[in-house]
Image 1 (cartoon, rainbow, N blue to C red):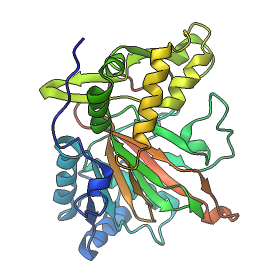
Image 2 (image 1 turned 60 degrees about the horizontal axis):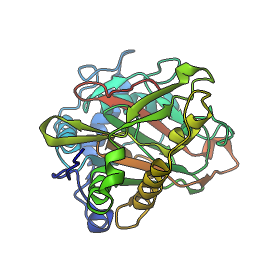
Image 3 (image 1 turned 120 degrees about the vertical axis):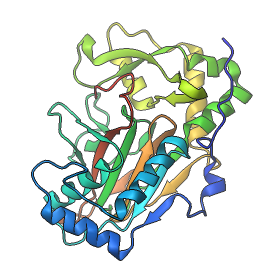
Length: 310
């Protein structure tokens, strides 16, 4: 198998764009008023048509183009969350997201969005989900085209979001360790964390070629390692361990990573095919009403990814 580097705007280095504002979109007062008006007038079902954004809508369509055909991430700043109830924040998140892509239901209840906050769940437990605890998360991708996070409240300390171009990491592996890069195109065992039975485990490659010379990277070291609990799942080979060690070194390399300190009203959109994301551990305020709270949405642009159960 011969693996080639993938060219295009999806390859970037955090060190080179850290000080750029090209990936930020700051809402002006007119945009903010449109969001507020749409939130207050929204019916029960949120759609692009029921959440009109006359001037902000074209901006979000531009963000969609950047997500699909550009660097693969956009940070929207200035969503007017202050003074909103939790339900109004949900409506705002859903309404903005509808102008970028189609909402993909999440979790066992097939909810349109997920609340990301520390529930006291033990991150060591195999069935604990990443949105339920305050521990550090390894670099990973979510199982839909786009993941969006609206920050309602940041943590007292920590909880920084970090992203990396999975295309850049892939290309570095091809340049330096092509044999290990080839392994990424073979099936690996993954864990859905839905139980202890065989249905919780499935195989798919980490890297999948896409049309037009593009690449889709589905990585998540926490879920790959927890798959080892499966009775029928074989242990990692030495080469697989080497590949994961190299992936983890590269994704945590300051040359590649870009860190964002999400504040209230920040909404981050990431293309899961070409961007991996992480989070530092965080400390919460003691008061429940001040604790870290984000809203996570999964979106589809064209078709779902290979594995959409999570």
